Length: 164
Image (cartoon, rainbow, N blue to C red; front, top):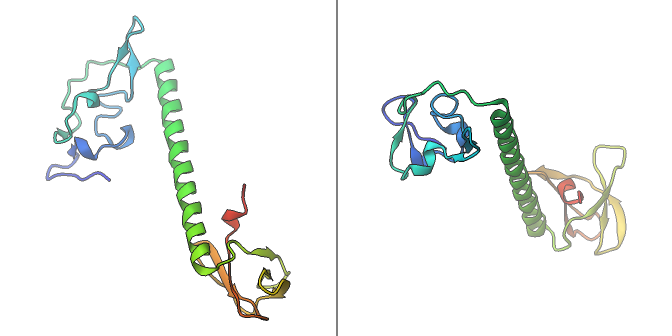
């Protein structure tokens, strides 16, 4: 993420990817785009950085500007939207990783399972077309793995892939 230089609190502009890891945020800059009294947009200082500049709190004189409640609300909405987008991106990446692992383990894709009331699930083997109680299951990275007790076919299951 951010790399600090020898001086504590100094960050290179290229290492700042949003307001939350910028040393100016809530000190020398209210964050994001704001508007002036006449409604014209005011760009934040980061719009003029070239990437190699050292950024630190106090590098711009603070003129006592206090953002309005509306600007703070816009800022909160913007941050909430960015957090939601990041959360959705992480969930999609996790789902892709689970799918990749399931496909690597089994040629049948995500297996069908039922709760058996015991320690292991009941699994459906598409190869021999029957339900079986797994003798053992191995779980890692959100993916369960077992072999059919009748034909030995490797099967994999992830509950993440069941969600639509």
